Image (cartoon, rainbow, N blue to C red; front, side):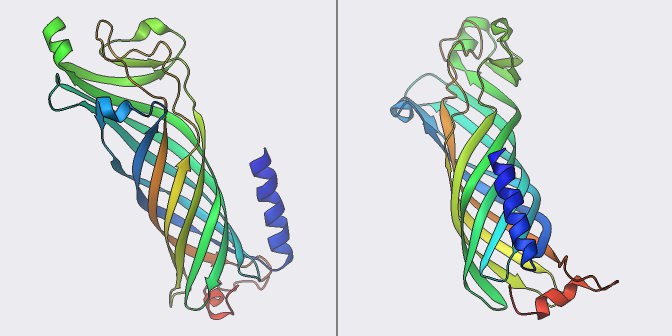
Length: 263
């Protein structure tokens, strides 16, 4: 609710001083480091850093000053892969998570022209949609004659569902929070559109969930650890179309925005 109030207030202020809207598709990737609550977890296991992708839609409100409000809605993939150390029994546990992520960034241009440079800062909110994964375990091979299998993530209080095809998460943090800071550049195109290229660092505030009663496969010693937050280096490109709500001339082209003095 607080997010929506801030968003609406910024909208009313910006339109009152002849704001311009910029909107369009966004695509990019993120390099993710999983920050575990147990600081010595990486001494027990090898935890991969993940390179993955995201795609969605971006929207900006630009005022007459150098300030703008930026928001987006993206579909994001994150992978968590845990393996045993080289000199221990074989273990390879991988989970792919999907999120719907939105953010609210304040953006301030510190160099303006056909190519503009800006800094950005603001909160991020992600909704954990689902997940799936696979595992290979020497213990599973020794005990059951099957080295591993695949599974889907299930959000449930039913703790009897652990098995070869389901990882039951009884206490997930499906709504997760973070904070972003970054830099970017806007490039005005001859067609009247813009390219926005950004690099930002995102600090994850919320853990994925709690480890209580979390079990990958009944009868196997290894237990998944989801008490970690996702810190990210995010890089992206947006293709933005302009629209000025104060220009009421019928049939006027938004391409004229790039020829006006930059807002």
